[in-house]
Every structure is written in C-alpha cells, then in structure tokens.
Length: 60
Image (cartoon, rainbow, N blue to C red; front, side, top):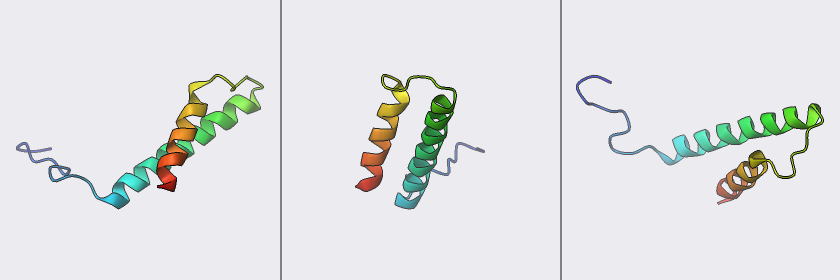
C-alpha cells in the first residue's frame, strides 16, 4: 500500500466477499474434519458455530 491508496478504498465487490466467505467455510470444514479424524469431540467446539454461520451467509 503506497501513498495511503488502499485497494478496498471504495469497498469490495460481492464476488470478493463471496469468495472470502467460501474460503473461510472450506478452512472450517478442514479443521472440523481434522478434529473428527483425531477422535476429538466437536459438539461444543467453536468451529461448529463457525460452520453454521458461514453456511447461513452462503445461502443468502
């Protein structure tokens, strides 16, 4: 970022937001899968809430 010129100065596009949200959702799924593969409990883990929230946003 040079001379205080930011690429998001005028906001980011809908597609950029959708892409970042989908990327975050994929990361959460991978982490969830890792926890399950290790045999750890995920019932009260914050990743479950993150997955639900991301899914709701993606459906809108």
